Image 1 (cartoon, helix red, strand yellow):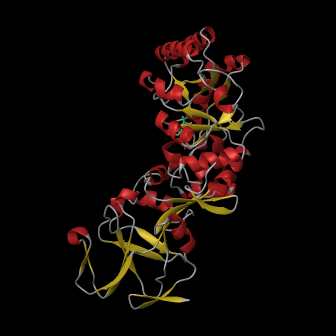
Image 2 (tube, helix red, strand yellow; image 1 turned 45 degrees about the horizontal axis):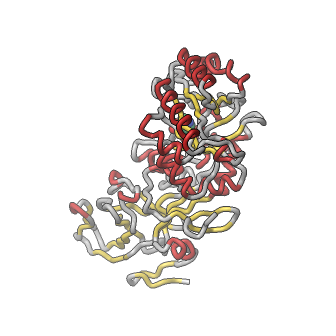
Length: 418
Ligand SMILES: Cc1ncc(COP(=O)(O)O)c(C=O)c1O
């Protein structure tokens, strides 16, 4: 089948008709939740049988949509999640997620009302916070019995804390020698310690330093395992490189989304060998296609001048959606068949302009491909922007509609009620 687009014969099949009619826009992220689950399975297979997963879904699940990711994973047996701010946990609670939700970072007094109200588990580094927390728990218990262990997932962890030890990153967590007083305070004041954790700073490519971090942590924290307190250390890099994979939990983030930790070919090769795959693609269809004559300019600031008659397509995607303005005149998107098409002129807030070729132009395009090597994979885009896939993914804005493939079905955030 062909479509007449501005006088050019364009192949219109295959296309993203179904996706765009679901999304009610001609751009959307398509997120494969089954791939996320498969990636988690691959990571778990690197660990001891008893090791459980805390799925890191902060920053809107690295751009993938924390509510749908959590709902789906919870349905598939993942019952521990981590976010970076109480507000992120609140969104999940309001969406009906009842599982354990840890809030990373050094917990602060001002966060206590939101943490308690939403039954979130803080990550604690100071005795001062613990004193305030214990006092609030006591008052709550006296006043309205909010803090109770009724056996359901949420309530089991109300009032619990995770204590974080700084094993060498010098960012979050208490000093190893302070752990003893924090734990003593908790044991003596009825504060349940769910677990003790640390975080690796360079598990991917500095095994010597990571080993020192792990040893420092274990020396400080291991004695408390006999109290039933669990231990965890490993982020994605730690898991893949085998650090802390025999402890009680792992805390993978970027790798569950199938995004490489860095842009090195060797990292991609390792992901491919393990079977990890990106879970997200960004789809779009031009809102307008026009033929522009030689000498005519395109976009803000006239940075692109047509040399000949050119086909210019406008897509409803801009820097406010997470398509970085530094990709002006540099970005590449691909046709649905994989042919690269250059972004010409400035990236605007809500639009990009792309040069199409009449022989390869089609109806629908990938802004981001769900592979590792296309010119518009997140890895290649991160390379172009001199950043990492983490930033490319977490920059994808809330206003982009997200569609989900879960258990083989395609659905939107709106239609997937619990
Ligand atoms: C404490 C902690 N654990 C785990 C993670 C997950 O890290 P990654 O996305 O590299 O797997 C993060 C992310 O920054 C983190 O801050």
